[in-house]
Every structure is written in structure tokens, then in C-alpha cells.
Image (cartoon, rainbow, N blue to C red; front, side, top):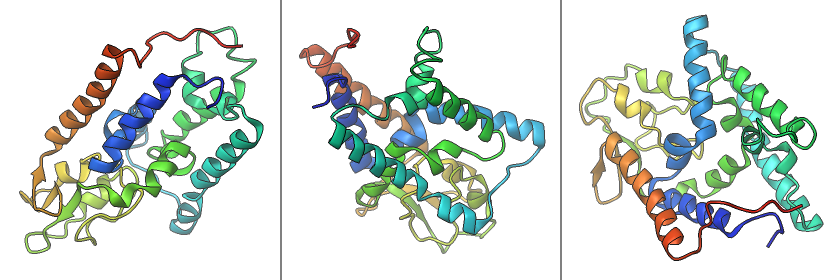
Length: 244
């Protein structure tokens, strides 16, 4: 137990892990606030530049491992030093301190990473998610056990390539019978853009299918339910006193 982590944070982590087991990285694709910010800047970038940029495939493939390095480094240092080492570097913590006097003292690096990630998202979609996010790396490690995933019916697929083009994390959906990639965030963008009904869908091994809207609603409901139950039982605190 680290001194600057509230029990509420473990509750939120538990909710994220529950979603990961059921719907893979659905939290990243549908609920993550930092992911939403990057998507908004990505939309702005498309309007400004008229297209989406992509890194060279070899550079992109190598850069994807950076987030695993970030995860390993910060978990190891936190274990050894007994403190929350990532805090000054965390862009989301910096976002929550935008109006704080500590922004440019304690969180200047995290603020720089936040600004850099948003500017980068003008050119490359979800740049922080793909290359630096330690939470994304952690969920990527357990992504393959997720029950519901994107599947493709090869018999009805017309191989238009729209699914590959729209994917914010550059997963090659068209070539897969079902998406196993740890990079997939189950955002349903590929399912929504597919022109042939029921060719791309979100399903499990028992052939149960979920629509994109249902996936979002169930993910949000489960996340809210965990917070609500823990709040009712006193295990979740909405306000946390400052710990120096």
C-alpha cells in the first residue's frame, strides 16, 4: 500500500479490470477521459490537415513497446522506493491540477507530456495511448483473455478496407477472423463503419453478439455500479484529504 493512493483508486482499478475481463480494453476505447481528449484533438487535426498521419510501420511497431517500458520502470521504482513515482509525470494528474499553484512546480513534466500528447494527437491518433500509457500496457497484457472481441465474417466481407482505415490504434481488422491484438481498445469504430451488416461484430465464443451501443452502455453501467456499490458501503470516497 502506497501512502498517496486512496482505497477509492483500487476500487476504480477493480472496475477497469472487470471491464477488461469482459470486454477487453473497453475502458480505453469508451470511458477513458484522456483518450476522449486525444480523440477530440484527432478530429480537429483531421479538419485542419484533411487526413490522418501514420508512422512508418517499423518505427510504429518498435514505439509500441515504449508503454511497456514505462509500466515496468514506474512499477519497479515505486516498489523499491515506496512512493508513487509516476505522479509528477502523469498527464492526467497534471490535468486535474490545471488550476493549482503546484502545476508548474510539482507537475510541470506531466503537464508537458499532456500538452505534447494533445498536440501529437493532431497528427497521430491517440499518440499517448499507443506509445506511452502504462495503463494501456497493463491492460494490453490481459487483453487476450477478454471474453467479447471484434469478429469478422469472411463470407460476407467485401474487403473494402474501411475498418483498417478508421481504427484509431491501427489494428489490421480486415485480415483477422477475430481481433486478438493487445492494441485493440474495443471502440467499435470498425464495426460502425463496416458497410455490410453483421460482417463485423462484437461477440464471444458462444456466438452471443453485442451492438456497439450496448457495449458502451454495459461498460458504463458496470463501471458506475462498482462505484455506486462501494460508495454505498463506505469503501469509496469522493473527496480525499491532501497528503503531504
